[in-house]
Length: 103
Image (tube, rainbow, N blue to C red; front, top):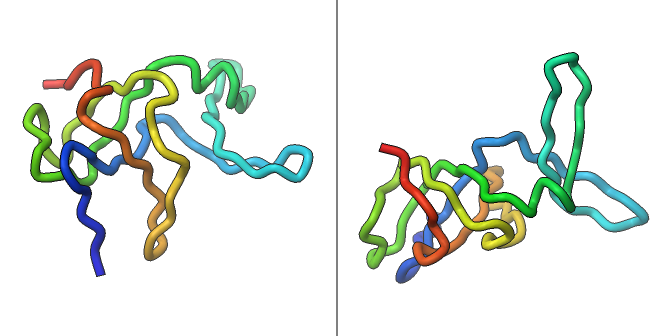
């Protein structure tokens, strides 16, 4: 079985590393970064407030500005919760919140 986005929606994976953390019995995804000196920093609040680069997995039929495999920049917090399907984790958004496409 496959999932196909509809309309102007597209599925994607983040370029940055994303981890699932549990805090006070609430599980959520966070962006994780490693500093030059080797410290690992996980941030949901600050990390989610900035635009993020993603790799497009699949596009709905009405997406015109990019295709599967494109690297695009999405507005902050304009994506779904993580979805897991057949062992793959991905997110979805729509074409209207894309700020830039890498050429």
